[in-house]
Image (tube, rainbow, N blue to C red):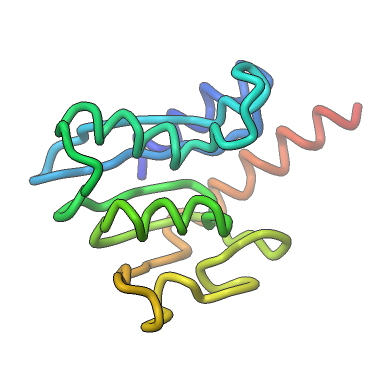
Length: 143
């Protein structure tokens, strides 16, 4: 999660919502990403999607089985959908997102057995730190 926090801080420096993600395969970080929606003019450029795209290119496979994604904020519907399609095994996230979270806050998509893939989820890892980064960013924006 420390690497994901570093990515979140990079996003904040770039004026992006500070969310960071890293994908781990066989004990190694194979991809990193942070929000790039504003700079890329791309509503899909969330940290998770950026990391998934990099990992798929690196592994030369759109299936990312055997991986764990660490992300600083509970993923949205779009991102968890991409994770299901990519077949990641595990998701670890920091702060919950009561307005858009699809992994427990608003929905429980990763554990829905109606989908053809279920993702193991652990939330709340370093939640206070990740929440502070987000709240500090938005506090600065309001000044």
